Image 1: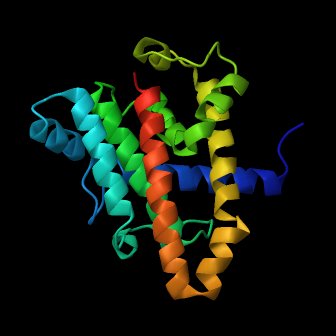
Image 2: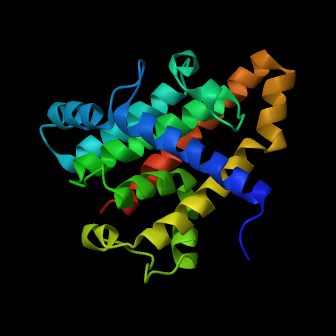
Length: 211
C-alpha cells in the first residue's frame, strides 16, 4: 500500500526539516561558521592533533550552547512546514555543526549522502546504535569509514525517517515546549541547559560514529 496524502505530507515536512538542519550544520549561517572552518580552527589551535581537536570542538560547542544562543541569526526557520521552538531548532543546528566538524577532522566527505545522514544520526545521542541495529544493511554497533561510504540509499532513507520521527517527538515533549511557551524567562534558562547537555551528547555520539 502507498502512503496516504497525510503521511506523505508529514514525510515531506520532516525531510525538509532534516535538510534544513544538515545544511545549516554543514554550511553554517550568518552566526555559525561552516563545519570545515570549525574543524580547521580547532585543528590549528591543537597542533593538528585530531583527538584534541575533537575534544576541543565538543567542549567549545557545549559551552556556546549554554550561553546566550544564536536563535535570531538562523535563517529559513519561518519557511519550514513544521513549527518547532526556535531555541530547539538552534540546538539541532549547533549539534549538527559539531558532528559535521568532527567528521571533517576524521577525514570524512561531509558532502556525501552517507556522511550527511550520519551527521543527522549523531543528533540522537545515546540512541544512535539502537537505530543502526534496526535499519538492516549489515550495520552493527561499530561502523568504519569504508562501511559508511557503501551504505545503500534505501538504508539512508530508513535512517533519516527514524531520526526525523525522533527529533519531531523531542520537539513535542511537554516538559520543554510548554515551559518555553508559558514562562519565557524561565523557559530560556531551561532551554539553555537542555541545549548544552544535548549538544555535548551529540558531540560524543559523533566522536564514536566517525571513527
